[in-house]
Length: 284
Image (cartoon, rainbow, N blue to C red; front, side, top):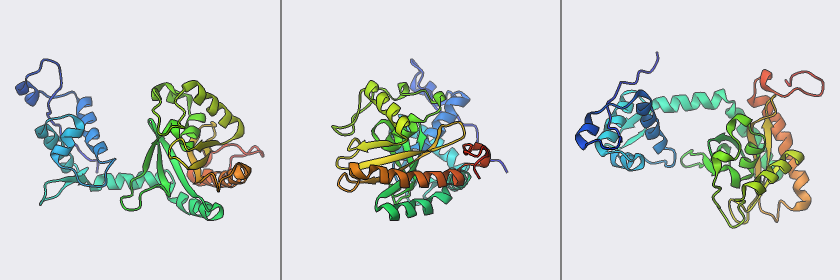
């Protein structure tokens, strides 16, 4: 049966509104949905439970409004509340939807391939998709084993992110939504012109590199997993140190990463979304 989310009345931040009017005014449907989704996003950066005060602080709401919204989400199954501490955690509906999305994207097929790639290269390996301004690692060594949290990293400072930008769907808006580019290390490219040139070079050679631009002393090579339109469905990376991933061995790492990406294209994409092979037939 469909999940029904009760209609809620929450405060508005309209200029000039008094505390009494804010407490009783009902926001638009879009604003209520945005706030509810914002509460769920509060749990993205932490593996711990949150109190109503924690949620209010992160959302910029009053504690009473945060509590009222959270209770609505509890009623719909999107949050749970601890009877002893009154703190909130993500609920069973979120777990169900997460598992459904994970399998619908075929990500359950990716872990064995990444493990095999890591064994072959003695490097860590990750698979990421784009999530707004970030590359979101969903499978691989960077997924935190203690919490299951994925790793969100800025697109411009990672090899995974550069691949997702270089082979992005033009509808995603290019670099403009990412500006200004914040430095992560002293090597991070923050000049949009220089970054665009690097993305052009990545498309020409088929891979992107990150040399200490995200974490000092770490070198990462990433390749795209492309759909039939030639856009990045996901990005695959192998990560080590410059002493292991030397300039002379870049081609060796690239070839193994690309072989894994080709296998994952078949596993992650339905036949009608895969690239046409040289035979002229859809990849199977």
